[in-house]
Length: 158
Image (tube, rainbow, N blue to C red; front, side, top):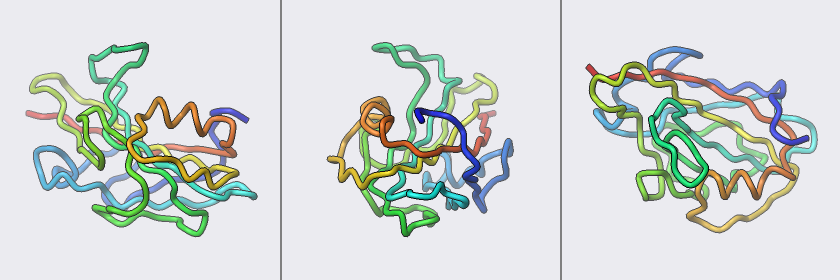
């Protein structure tokens, strides 16, 4: 199937689609991941992966663009949500150079950035190793992706 949107839905109690991400979930606040929940996963889903990417970041490096804030995977099919500040499952490496969530914090005066939180439904339990970058993860999960969708939040600094 590749990377095509599906009927799966991704929501958060912290912000609505297109809404402003609360400071609590940014580098200017507590820097904890927002609670996320998904529904309508495709039949045959065996695991999930979640990522957060800022395509508005003015960075291009090694054939990629934007800034990766979160890479989380090896989430079992029995899960349909992640609590705020989750430390569960396997963390990949963000563009901060570390595991775990790193919240929005665009450069001062850079305007509003869009943060894409993605959920991927996979037809296999891949048991992937820790520390994968977003781009490594996408390469490994693409052949196993049954569906995906996103929730977009915004943030800007004064």
